[in-house]
Length: 258
Image: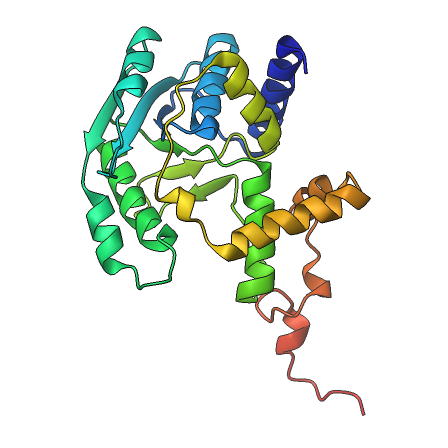
């Protein structure tokens, strides 16, 4: 895809998400979680473009967590952010050791890793006076999470575009929620972002790999599958589901018909 057209498509989807969910507004100060992967670089790039063009004012602060993984070297990330003149902080905390210690043999690192990382992100947001934390999750992240929860957890749940944190002090936003993963990969290649590999994420579980393969197979038969799964999250009909909390009829005291 031509680079200009690619950039326009990504920014169009970011703006659509912002309009649909009210993610960013006047006076926001946003902590942008920059892992060094293609998604977080795409997020920072898109938010900076929005910042330059928006009719309202908001601030960005980039934050990278060095988790102490073997071989992890954030120097390229450091140099790139400095060159781009983005305000940022690189914090080092050895969560890697704690994650490995707490993860049972054969299990994935994701649960403990996410828990430690989230707590550190919120503390960093408070330290830098940020009211929102932006994460780089994209379209495939949320539809894969939806299918994982349905098939393996018995829940209809995905990644929301906007979420109030448990501490009630911060709000998590996902501005790239409509953006396809392959477009972010192409952007990263064209922009030559300094990609940092993650040894923890490289150990992702077999279930998510299965879901990725399943989506590839389904998409081969219908190119609309991914878009339809995403659209389904905004087209929920509670009266056609089983959840008693959503349908007052299930809590009725009337006698059921014979």
